[in-house]
Length: 461
Image (cartoon, rainbow, N blue to C red; front, side, top):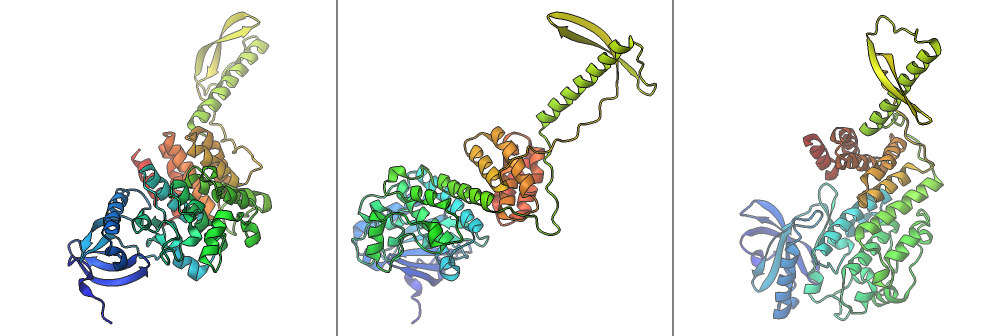
């Protein structure tokens, strides 16, 4: 049967349905005015016949549009009604959804899963700061662009369509697995509810299964309310037990016991995996990789070292003069320089005039990064935690060691560590030093925009 072409406003041409669900349909179309591909979501007819639902749908869509400028949130271009059916026009993302990724591939590689979760967490935390609760966080609403970055879609739409609870038969099919306990009991969703749902998504991305997965929708929803959080390590032997306490907190029945932000939850996952990696295995550089590079000391560190060495040289000259009765002469090649040095001993101050060579001492050899028994993974995450707290000075030595330990391994964490170190140096005003690490991060993670953005800032600075 041919697709009805007037289902969308005339501006949006050549519609092609790309998704259909309980609340409506999604079409890919061309915006004739701007000449770009867009996605148009239409509210289902059964909801459109209810004036209250239509008005609420439009109101929620307009509220969600306020978030369009935030990173990793699908941009909304237009909101309106056509043929008595509300619609939302948004950017078209060609990479599919995480639901499709899970259906086709199952559990994801931890590094990739964490990257997606971090992006989704940034989007959710931004929405919560604006007072907007998603209410329906699930893989189907986490869309991928052509760079494989996640964008969160459908903010507030579930609530607008009256889909907050299980009371409407069929409306939450496929969603019950991600409902927080309070939503499953018909209570109002909050930011903590979104964070709970994101934790379910994380559990599934890492293990390939939802924590309370069941063939019965009702049984799965009831398990969110009553069942203990299962061990992800027992469910998936490849995952470490260090993840279990993170998920127990993230999936706590009491919203007040969960992580205070989505970013904090993802950081805890990273730290747990890093701890497990540090205690269970050591990564060896790949064949042909460069040896770990020594990290150059900070500018202030160089000044301190130079000052100490210079004072040491002067003290040596003074000692030689005292021992040799002042007969020590500089070499002819070095023009003499007169200095007055003040020595203090037991409360007595004595000034002596000494001759020292004008040629400065050779520059000191850069000291190696401080040794640590921690793995590069753990050092990077410890530095990241200090970054999050705004302690960039404290993060610097940890990240320098992390880069040195991870250099040449080729794992995702090498890119993370280089970016974190470069960003820290940037925040400390040491832009020229930051460039090499941001360049490295850009090379290791060509699909991510953060290293590119920071690199531009460093070069401008």
